[in-house]
Length: 495
Image (cartoon, rainbow, N blue to C red):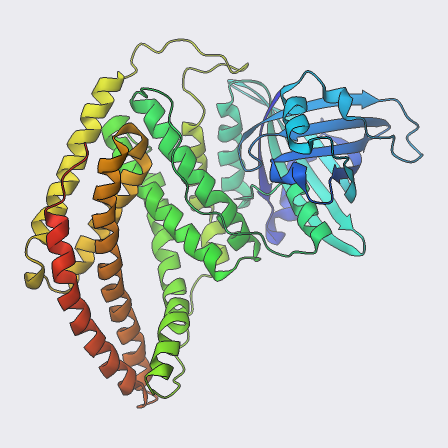
């Protein structure tokens, strides 16, 4: 079977109200005690697979889940196992999953290795079925803990899973409950969190961008779906770490990169498929700009302060961040979560039915029409960049910053659609874009650093050394950018 569900964390202030909303007359309370298995070198986790033996009330069930652990749709296979409910968990037997998609993935991942118990969960689940116009979903409020040796991770989350009907029911219900209770989306499964607990690693490795995987000859909607899917794969694991409070500076950086790339992809979606609506775009923009200042100060401290010290400059404390929302609160905002849900809705084919099959859609744009629309938009963005890059000495700071944003947009879209065009031409074009991004980015970084040190100079005059030193670096950077931008102005389009 295929599991279609979303998982949300519950803010402290909403917990009582949410429990009352879920625990209505028709709700059930079930205790779920599970043991999760993997090899010592984590072969299953590396393949996005979770295998558990769980006591569900009075019955043991062996479950395998496989597929992208951060996706809305995954393979799931459940097998009831005969054993006493008050004894030790029954022995794991992976042959119970033979002949299923999950079983095939398990076999490839293990390569004859034997899984062992790694961690446990003990959850009280309050659950009920919610009937919507187009189908039914189950609301499951899980409260409990994950344990590994003497360590534990508290659980307080709401799962919304499709029972039957249109998969978009999950999005519909989620959007409503997010608005009512301030829930925030968390793509980390209990298996992923338990594995980290077993390894005693508080944080995950940041997720980076990757090439877009395209079907052969995509039409407009299929191309948009592929772009958004890659954008969400990049964004959501990093958002979970930042919103959950266990993020590194690189997680925050990758959230901003992913948001920027998604916003660029959605600009293209307006040409290819009609877009996702102004509220979604506005929420993504608000989150991106809300995170910008939080990272700028950290970036200056990490990159420029050591260089200033090497140049003989005095140590200067940068001004504190202004009081405002934290990165976690920005990404927990209901408006941002609902924007992400709108993007997830694009992953559910508008012509799909509950069992995952599809029927032809008479209004789908042909591949050739999509390629023509894509080429037309790329040409417009290319002309904007070329006009500014032809006369680099005439650009002021604001114009260089605008050019940098446009170069980033063109580079992001080029990376997204690279598989549709000759690789050699794409790589040549990207090299010129990347060189321009780097030189313009250095100038922007100098501007940000200069502004921070000017502010610091109000209380510490020693900061004027940094302002002067950065001013000299800016002059050198402007001179160096001239040749790079002229080469970019001569770049040959690949489309």
